[in-house]
Length: 327
Image 1 (cartoon, rainbow, N blue to C red):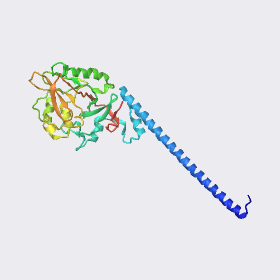
Image 2 (image 1 turned 135 degrees about the vertical axis):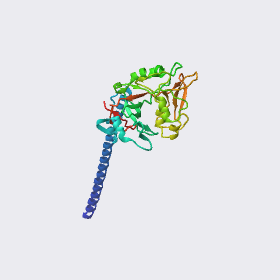
Image 3 (image 1 turned 45 degrees about the vertical axis):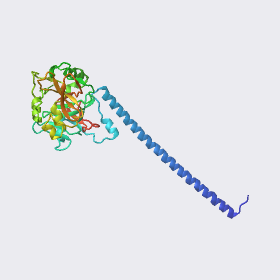
Image 4 (image 1 turned 180 degrees about the vertical axis):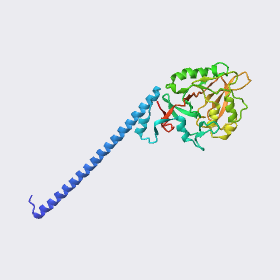
């Protein structure tokens, strides 16, 4: 086929336009491919980091499960980008660290002006602490620095005593906690051997002050009770509540809700009674103090005291970022 100059010019223009379109399409394809590659690249990076954090989480969980007291969640928190994982390079004694975090209203840590002790009160409090490869909760920090902590995941129900006796010193639950349970703990050098307030509770007790006074007395010749592991006192549950009716009428109130009240448990205190059936107190999950025969079963929250020399090196006390002790 023969083309004149006009036809050739038109043909050249047509082919030129087609070539330009092809170039543009190639550029668009190149850009899309580049974006696709970039998207894939960043997706791969995100997936890699997520997998890395999963590995960190599994590693930390395995450490907790093993019962080790060397579990350090710092790298896991750094991986997931938790910025409030407070770090204290040299560490502070627990009492010194927490005394800077007291409140005067709402949920939180309160200073008892009578005793100087620090008590966590309310329903939602950041009192989680890592010990013996697991998470515990701080009940109270005494003025001298000793720290009362509770293990809320014990799981098994126990009889306060297999024999009908309200003597804590010879009770089966005391034996179970200070032998079987204690043997499962690590870093036991940090645990303080204590004299527990095992005084029996009179049914006429009304105020928190009266209750604390009764607990401090060892009735029925129980004598001194020194051991590493104990149980909560009735006053622990009462003081943890922000409800005034709870502290003003402790044996009647059904409004003792707190972070501790969700964990029903036998108390270390037996009941003062003339009845033939020997009873001990327990905290009914969610609201109030009750008592029943020592030969019945009830949930258990083991309690220990950490020595006053123990230091916090990191954490903010939340469940995702518990306080970590210096090793």
